[in-house]
Amino acid sequence: MAVSEIRIDHLLLKDEIEQFLYQEAELLDERQFEDWLDLLTEDIRYWMPMRRNVKFGELDREFTREGQDINWFDEGKDTLVRRVNQILTGVHWAEEPLSRICHSVSNVQVLKATPSVSQATEVNVKCRFMIYRNRVQTETDFLVGKREEVLRSVDGQWKIAQRKIILDQNVLLAKNLTFFF
Image (cartoon, rainbow, N blue to C red; front, side, top):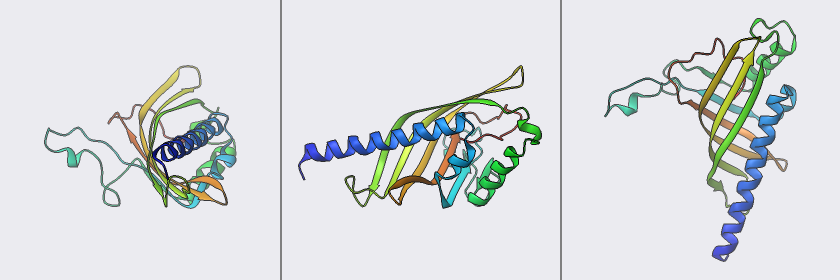
């Protein structure tokens, strides 16, 4: 395969992944939570470690460890389905009335495609995000960070198999984390 074909395949894959992530953000912003759940694999890992302020030279301690420390959340599909179902009851104390949310996704990078860029069935992706939330009259939150994800093709459709959310802030000023990243 020629170098120009590889570059074109990479650009086409990157565009496909970006469109998928933008569509996902739109579903969340429009509160189409059940449709959003359909974008998740059955074995999804949805994880957000906590961040610490550490001294120079101790960066290996900056984040809580997977499976060993407390994290903001570490969930699978079952827990995410239960969270959505709870919100959809209309009696979820932290989401009544529902928050108004805007997800922005940028800096999408396709890091690895398996088995190849032109025949990808699994893709490692990194991107940046900013989430704006307005709740009731005066509560506003801005959350900024990056996501590291694995997307998997299931029956010809991309689905999220893993998502690691890394907030840039280490102190969370939001009153709750009832929304999705």
